[in-house]
Image (cartoon, rainbow, N blue to C red; front, side, top):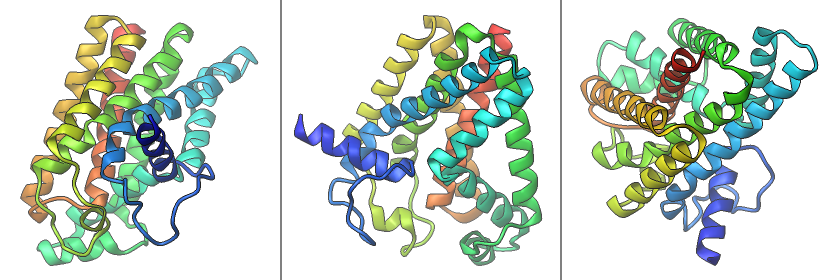
Length: 250
């Protein structure tokens, strides 16, 4: 039980900006094992965003405005960790002429045209989808989307080599198959507890296809994974799940 609690704390420290004790400038020794708690923390993040959105709706805030403010609050909660990865991937894959150039652009902290455009498209898509979700499903849909999107990352991580040897992903280490399987099972369990069996399975399929597509693209573009690639995959999966659920529930 103590190991599970330690992993939860590590996952919270990595995936959010909540103050959690962890060693400065070093990867926690249990970071790889903590991947199994990513979907739990993802569900907590999604539920928090959903409660904010639902609360604003009940105060009379229009659905689009409530969705925008809730998504903004979510970005503050996570430090826009995965959004930053998505933007870097778009800038690198779109602007680099070869692998070395793509990786160098992805390491640059400045936001380029491709990154700005993909963030705009991603936010607008999630905004429209969330605004279309009925009140009774807002929290459940967001908890499911965030849990499944993060729960698929360990499996993606073990399926790809590192694109460079000195990046965050390489320094953090890869989870093993057991940790990836546990994360996937927990994420699916959260989805099944939140939604109907059919919608949960469709959402899981959307997550799997999104992550598989990003893995294929990363292998083709830079020969493997980086931390930005994993973050970008989370955003693609999260967006795909929200659009799917909005279409089925609206």
